[in-house]
Every structure is written in C-alpha cells, then in structure tokens.
Image: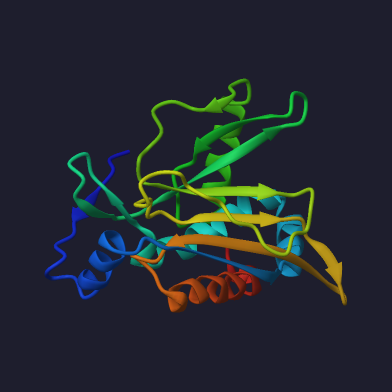
Length: 216
C-alpha cells in the first residue's frame, strides 16, 4: 500500500515556532497514564466474536488517526512530514518461548476489516521472531503488559530526541467497584503535542469505548 505524506513548512505551520523551540533547544517527551473503563469493550468483543487485543489496538489507532499531532515523522532527507494515516506497530507475544513478533497491520477505519487483517497477519507471521522485515514506515508503536495492572509506565526511545510518533501501552484490567479498569499510557514528543492533545486522546478513547455498540 502506498504511503502518502506531505512535507511540513514550519514557516506556514501554526505550531512551527513551538516545534522548532522543542527540537532545537529543549527536547521533551511527555508520558501520561490514565485508568480507562473497558467494561463495555469486554462486553462488545464477547458479543461480536472479537479478540480484545486487536480491538483495543483499533480503538487507539482510530483516535490517533483522528488528529494530526500523532502523524508526524521525518523523511530520508530529514524533512518534517505528516502522514495521511498511520498504522499500529505491535507485539505478538509467544508464550512457548517467551519471545515476540513485532509487526504492522495496516489500519482500516472499519473495525471488523482491521480485526480480520490483524488475525491474518498474526497467523502469517506466527513462526517469526523479532521485527518482521519491510514494514511500512507510517506507523506508531503499541505494546501491552497484560500480566500486571500498573500505576505508571514510561518508555525511553534512545535516539537523538527526535522520535515523534506516539508510543502507546496498556496493562492488565481488573474489576474495581463493578467495572473493569485498565491503565493506558501514551508517550509523545512535546514538539508535536501539548497536555491538551495528550488529554484529548484519553478522553476520546473512553468515549469510543462507550459507543462501541453503535458500530455495525
């Protein structure tokens, strides 16, 4: 699938000066963890014969793709670009040898189509380990720690401090006061997003979970 993007002219971008300040003078990555109510998500997956993991990946991918701040990257000439859409790069863990496959499933706005693509990719690559080759560049990182319910989680990307894509993680969900609560984390470079954008991501993820029953 063709990967489309536009080059960003900092002089014409309303965030251009802020972006330049953070990239040139003060490289900061924000990390925030929020408890999310996934009760309706669990019910929806069970009622529709879906798996929780790919459905949650679709939810965060849909919200990520709804906002420009999560779709920035660099081209080969190190020009700032914005992808037309981004796909999740996720981990498929293998209990038998405690290793994983890292792969990308191309995003679809349709949940059921994405779920089908995910299951096909998982099956196709089940014998592979580490990073699958020739993955699309227009991706962001998703990971899951389903064995523990944490309070906070932080991922350090050891590059030059210019990694712009979101890094999204969630942990184990547990019953609390009649609801299933799950920690959800996002790491994002301050050059492309502020606390407002970070907060909106969590608010819209929760809203989407609560309206899953309207999806056909």
